[in-house]
Image (cartoon, rainbow, N blue to C red; front, side, top):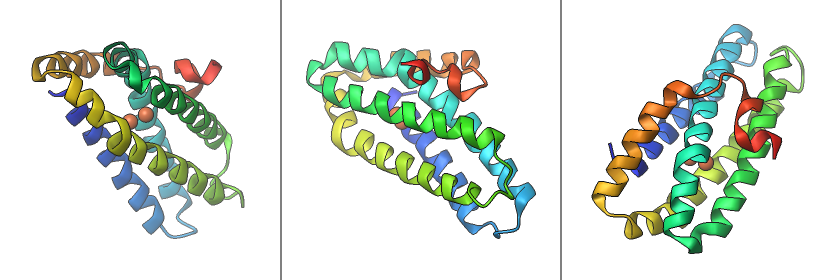
Length: 157
Ligand SMILES: [Fe+2]
Ligand SMILES: [Fe+2]
């Protein structure tokens, strides 16, 4: 699969989960816990394959994306720390929904920048075959993704 198509599909899955969270009732604690755990799994896997494979490949191929890549890593850093906090936070805690809202704002901003500002530059510079190889490598690497948000590279940088 084309690398950028794969990443955009991941973005859509996460956005779908965000919408479900927004629709869940304020007191739907079990449902909200389940959704946040699912969001964490999706985002940890996604940030892992981007950081391990896509970002370095993009930077090497299109040096003009360097600043975008560095900013994206900083955004991942914030996101994985929020996810780590949410793991320990009770959905009944008054800060839970607020933290998820800030998580969603961060991720939506990040996805918009990836999809609109710099993925198109990468698509233009890489041929269809290169994007396909990259996509296949990322798809395989999903199996190696860590379970915990603080185990992705950007967490400790
Ligand atoms: Fe990203
Ligand atoms: Fe992404």
